[in-house]
Image 1: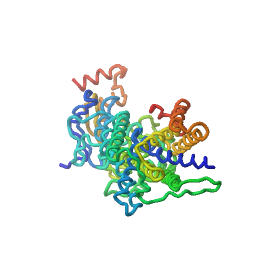
Image 2 (image 1 turned 45 degrees about the vertical axis):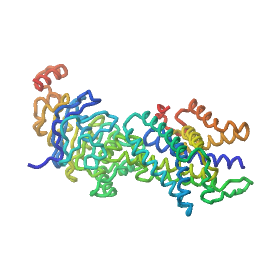
Image 3 (image 1 turned 135 degrees about the vertical axis):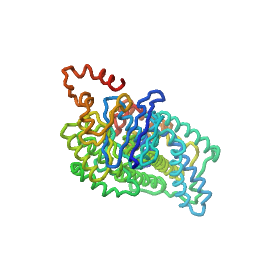
Length: 290
Length: 266
């Protein structure tokens, strides 16, 4: 039972991060390799707001999350916009550079020490005992809920929202979307904003649950196989991919060796690339991405 | 003198900073007019249309000379969505609908122009012109037939309530019956909504049947223009585009290129 809960929590983390990869890839065919760093930046933003708004902790969290939405939009508007219509590879390399830059900036501003934003905000993290004697911390439970809400919201938004439809349209055929009068820059900025927002949400909740230092990037990196195993352009795939990766990782930690934890997602990734490179739910034509 | 809706003057487009696709192309479209651009493959018809409707970076094409004026505003090298907002919608030749979106979604993604009817009523307008689309609302656009797809593409173009509709290769790959229906709809759209239409066509018979005015493009230049009726009667159009042999028994295939170049380039 505890095993199932552990898998679920880890899957929720990976899924919440993976949907950011999927969002951006789906609308612009760009792999955002700075996603892990942007997620970490969101968590550090909480450190900043936690000291600035120590009176009202909820406010601090909300502002940190909204700031990351703005950061995502700005990353597009000031950096990635120039890449629209250019080669995708150039854009991907730009995100690599951006990631390195953010990592450097984070260490420069906040140093390499560990932070505990939960203590800064004066919150506790009570353990909830579930039926079957499984235990889950409050913030881990919140993480699962956040993942459910984010995925539900994204599904509805992409299916019925006017801008959601435009995101799907732009992903299919950017030129035609532009010719129909859809502002591609607005669509892409929205995708970057949403992606960074959901990533930061994951980062913030993880930081609240278990503290924060610059190794958080690793979690973002491990969520990438989840997105790819599911098929990079599919949200449902990301959800399932996260579950598979999490199950494999928790299983290995429990039954083989905890030291292998960081390796497992990438072993699954390689296995997937060999068997079914376009992912579980991905579009087969997307194969040239690898 | 009235200002034409669209005035293209001495337009030159260069691809990849090296290849000149069209040179010195001038044309005009007035309010409520249907204008046809004729020409064979590679004559520069599509380039002309794309220059008017805007390039994306990936095409690596630029308007290097000349002007495109729409209601007096310059459109050269503006991004496509901005041009659409000004009231100029294009129906491209290929990839004209979003295949994974339903018919209704294809129409719903089009943003409204400011100061025009809202989306809901525009939807009713396009279903009035294309009742078939109303029956197919929920169908994915990728599953439509060629004719239905063309209807949807024109309908999507209408959704932004344009003043001018640019249509690239209306008849390409479609059955004559379907083409007949589409041209009827276009005339109906022009008559009821007052929208001007610029039609790019390989098939002179289709285009000149509904057009008021026509331009013939060859090798990136306008070589002939005039009222549609006059063009239909013109000996060169008869011979080169409608396939009437001009009285002689020579195979038009053998002499076409030679005689055309002699007549038009001296």
